[in-house]
Length: 76
Image (cartoon, rainbow, N blue to C red):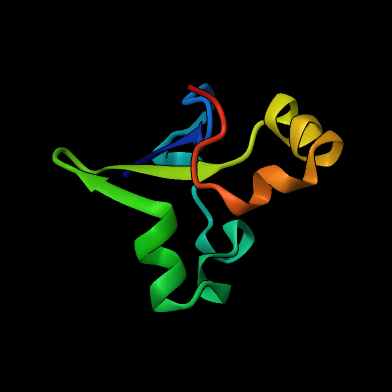
């Protein structure tokens, strides 16, 4: 299974983890609730998963403009 990290705000691909590098305990999936997994993970054919996180640029924007936390997508 390949995991691709993408920013949930701007869609930037941040990283990919290949199957031989996966350690689910280190990734922290066991700490996610079922609801968080549904919100943050997308499963695709051929054993691929997209995990949505926040890139550094979007994190800086959120820190500068805290009101953006109220909306799902602040970049259009």
